[in-house]
Amino acid sequence: MDVTGTLTAIGTALSVVKQLTEIDAHFDKADLKLKVAEITSALAQAKLGLVDAEEVIRAKDSEIKKLWDQLKYKAENTTRLDSMLYDTEDGQPVGRPYCPVCEEKGSLIKIIQDLVGPGRLFNCPKCKSNFGHVSVWQSKNGNY
Image 1 (tube, rainbow, N blue to C red):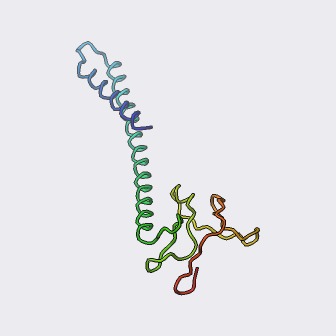
Image 2 (cartoon, one colour; image 1 turned 60 degrees about the horizontal axis):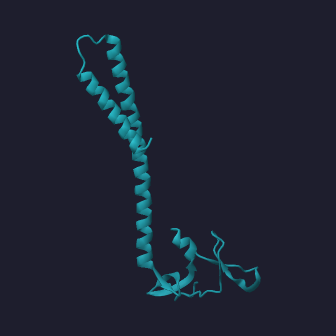
Image 3 (cartoon, rainbow, N blue to C red; image 1 turned 90 degrees about the horizontal axis):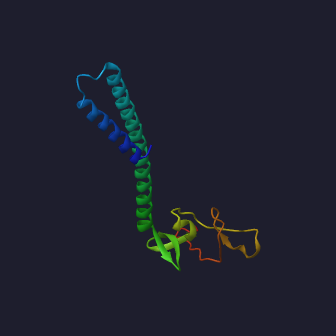
């Protein structure tokens, strides 16, 4: 149940409670039991809706944390050179770049070199984008 449905269920329960407060002496037990059942049902729906809303909020909080972590990582550990994002070592680009297509979609995926295809071009293993020839920077310890 979404937030709107939850608010509707709470509103229904409140309107039934209002009807109960306007009860007169001639109201019989069957009508009273019916109104209490309506309140119980509406409040149960509201409770389920709030549980669903809590799950949605937790999922969104988790996604926000993941995005903040990515932003922090990118700010502290990467540099951009010729429109490609690289890891850094002492402020200099190191290794293979990240796929800019996947980066735009929120993923940091390093591109790979196709060793069997003609020209040994670089491709993204996830989105399959082809980047042709790109610069690969060697680190101080000799790794790529």
